[in-house]
Image (cartoon, rainbow, N blue to C red; front, side, top):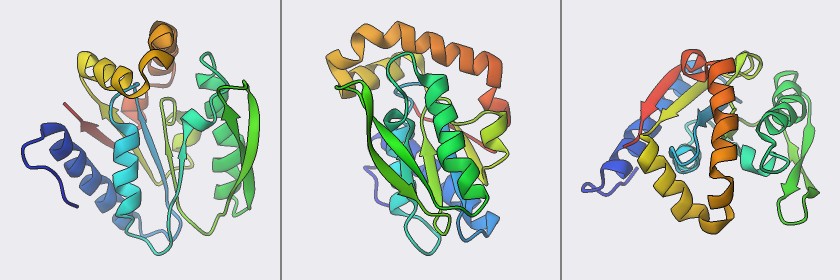
Length: 193
């Protein structure tokens, strides 16, 4: 896993990915489920892509971003419920399932995507780790990052599309943290500067 030696964020992401990959190997499952949770801009998406690119199990993982399931800016809880019902529970039962992508522009469900139980799953996004989802996961990760760095990364990435919704999204994240305590449920906790 190459990284820029002078970039502390890249270094932290690489270290975190190695920890997650080691945990996946330790599980010794043919179709592991990995949950990666954290607040907006913490580094979840980049981390999940690194893990997927270095997946230590035969077959490719099914990488699913909760951003594709949240039904709009007030939909954190609803997106997690969709992931639980449409992805995680069927996968745990060995059933083929489908989930529908949320079209943010049209504000409606879009195309369906299949999830096969024969392959592992990486589900990443704020809200991914709660009591119900953690029971179905082999590895669950909390990604911590300083507030200023998170906000800068998130707004650099999503710009004006996210800026007017930052506070309302952060309030949903706060509720998730208070209600679900994902830090305590996570089997791994990583910090990205």
